[in-house]
Length: 441
Image 1: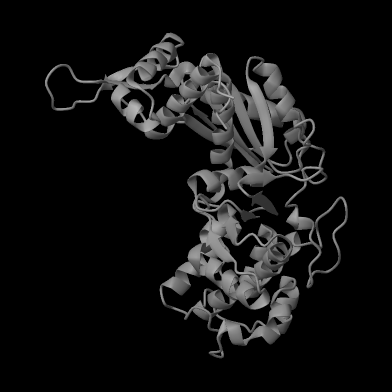
Image 2 (image 1 turned 90 degrees about the horizontal axis):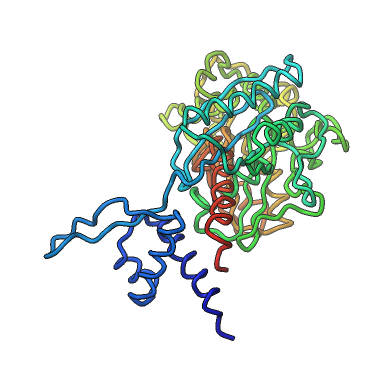
């Protein structure tokens, strides 16, 4: 059944707005060409969208032809202002943008573990208000928040999670109270990172993939057939609780210690670096400590000071599989079983350190691959970015030997900034859906 005139107009308007979002300012002629609509139809929708205050003339095309230059139409960017928050255990980052996603102001503040819940919430909310003021935003239309922990699929609220600061849960309510006109939503940080990688990062060519978050903690996000999967309780991807060999015990319902987190979390990576005699001090000048250590180790390998995949005895990583289980356990056992004393920063130790991390990550990745067969795994977070192609290549090589399912392993293209980017993208989508009408799908 053909669409009614009003439905057809709404679809055409949304199509034009989406093109203006993706392509930037366009002339009426360019809109006609890209949409396939007739000239009168395009003229009507331009008039409607201009009258609604959604688009405006932003310049001229500057085409060399007789008569006046064609007008360029663009989305009215300041029609709405958006905020995105990346809430971490140790602090919060905020960015404010216009309706098309152009960043206008950003800032971050640390929030120590010894700060009380009330002061922590006040500091975070004050930061949002200050950044909005710096951006020239009188009011915020939509606020997107990325936070660790489980998001209740039914209510959309951050669930109480043992080990996370209380101020995380209080922050959402405080923002809604102080910004009553804003639409505030919260999403798991790893899910947002995956959405950002899918839209703007290394997974743009993938409808199905898994992002493995490597930062202070570990997590995974699952995208199947283009859709993010959250699970019945919102816990899809809580890989930190995955029981794995080589740990001192098993995780519990309230503590992921003993799970995959014990092998791949930032504290475990720092401990592993110490076991291999790598320098720790000074590695975190501009990034988290674990990421700085991994980046330094990769730099030594890339510089050619140690042959990639080669240990002290000259055997390739692929030939030393008998040692892998011992390298995948806690750092104290690694130190006692496989690591010999070496000078601080010894290139061979850096190489073996990266092999040990790859062994550990392969345990988690192989489990995900066996269950989901995603075809692509992205190593995300600051540690995934620091490891780059060197670490991703080592993990992929191990998965190739461990699983019959072909799997590409890629390093993140966005690093720790993926959470903030994902939060901003979801805020922008929500605001545009409300202002422009629902997408034509």
